Image (tube, rainbow, N blue to C red; front, side):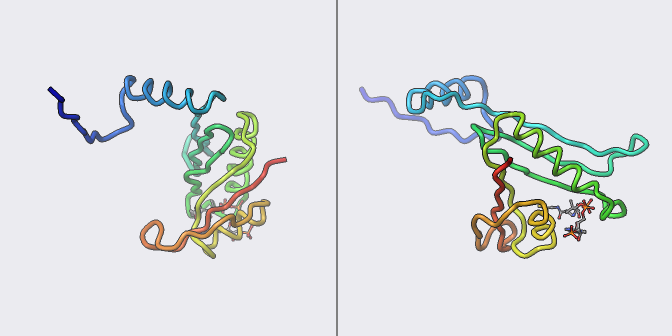
Length: 140
Ligand SMILES: CC(C)(COP(=O)(O)OP(=O)(O)OC[C@H]1O[C@@H](n2cnc3c(N)ncnc32)[C@H](O)[C@@H]1OP(=O)(O)O)[C@@H](O)C(=O)NCCC(=O)NCCS
């Protein structure tokens, strides 16, 4: 008798079984090793957190998930230092391209452009229904 397939939705990123399943199935399709790494970069003064960046790199594509400098510390070069640390970390872990998403024509877009990033694509109706730019930079 045919048994019914159970489809289950779980919060989170899955357990070891799920990770091993994906890993084995993907390696049959794409034998090149797929590497994943994440990091948090922080800027502190007197033990106080004043800026942070959340970063990841997967199979050569590095993504800057969040970059934030506390309001009263902005325009003092801390954002530039955090961005440079992200770019160095990404290259050290094999990134051939750097990516991030920011509000299209928002103030941060100009900041990234000054640091050699360009708009790769535009996403309508994106986070909170706003228009976002997918920005990219080829390191080196
Ligand atoms: C974008 C941000 C990280 C830059 O950090 P910073 O320490 O102020 O940056 P630096 O001092 O190295 O450089 C100053 C640049 O940031 C720009 N800036 C200042 N306030 C900003 C703000 N609220 N949002 C975006 N950019 C800002 C300045 O205009 C300046 O740009 P310029 O180089 O084109 O003149 C910081 O402004 C911030 O945390 N903004 C709010 C969060 C944000 O927008 N993050 C990026 C989301 S993708």
